[in-house]
Image (spheres, rainbow, N blue to C red):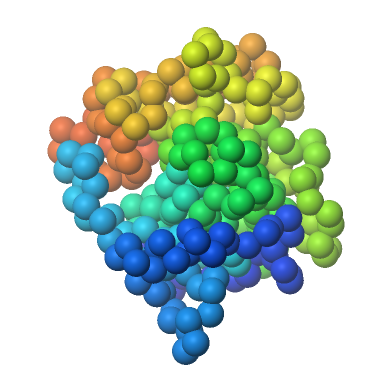
Length: 316
């Protein structure tokens, strides 16, 4: 896969302390230290709160080893800029999945950003806070409900990119967000929660609005209510002014039931939001932007680019 024109650049998301964050549960961090995790940057005195990285072997057919990150308490943005000659002015915030416990950093972050830069889109990985915090609802349950803090990080990320758009060669009204698995839920929450910022203004960057111009959710969970044929309470009231949204899923997904995307598409359509849904018969979970023979969802990236052209975001 073609790489970005220049080396990725990582910048802090917040100007100071991460707002609305209680920090990482000490017992959770202790468990990670004894469970095969490795320091990304090991402090001399083992200071609590440092990030960890680990490689694990996925059970998804054909996926193999996957590198993940966790213990994020200082969110960042990592920019992958395209060749200036190919720059379309479009930027795409990228939210890796991981159940709001970890971030599939390589598969659903770096590889996606590299692909974006190769087609003239500025790929920006959002490293949002994980794992779940002790003040999250029903803390300790892996599936429901989603964590609170990442939405603050995503809203801040949209505003920060928009406020620095000229500096980064981005059109301020061509800024989208794409997410995978739990990150897909985060992308949808960001796209439908723009009417109220969930944190107090931090600096001048927050004067730029936090509504993305388009959103993509790939194989997300947390969308359909438990044992009900409707969306969760998070999406009961979807603003009609929400940006165009694309949903991508597979019918054989054994991790996130495809009904999550189906009921989300229905709710968006009823709210008057321009919506496109692609349901592939096979491909399982975590296909990201993998281009593999016989992997049906590999074509979603081409469909996505055509969708952006149809919406007038990318040049024809």
